[in-house]
Length: 165
Image (cartoon, rainbow, N blue to C red; front, side, top):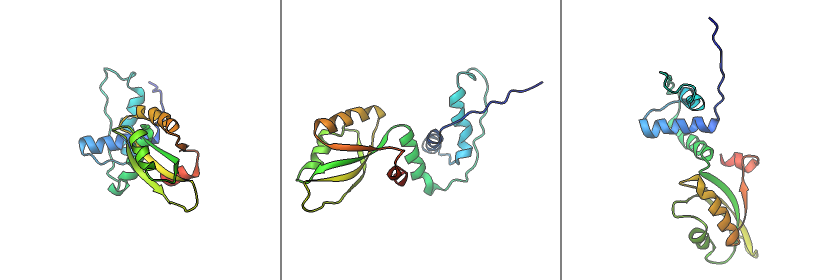
């Protein structure tokens, strides 16, 4: 009897999400390889529906100090964390304008780096935003344009992104 071998590819971000779910919901600390079986099941759930399936969750070889990095990858994978360079006019009230008119009530600034320079009308700030729901991104982008905030999305093709993540 021959068995067909199937290889399932799982995105790193989804494995990170699975690790965080285990920790937050079940109190289980697992390493990426230990969470891989459960993460992989998501890709074949229709094929195994109604069948008895066992996933081995193993490997406590994961330092809890790495959890911020794993959480970061999980949020980026879920499209709930985004980074921008935002140009702020150098006059009072600009950050308040951004907070009150651009961000939604459940959006959170998780990174803000800005250095005020003399004799400039505008200056860029590095802004990291965490969303409660990934659907909140489009309204933020529209409001940045509406309220005249010049911005650039920092994506995974840029060197700065690899510095942040």
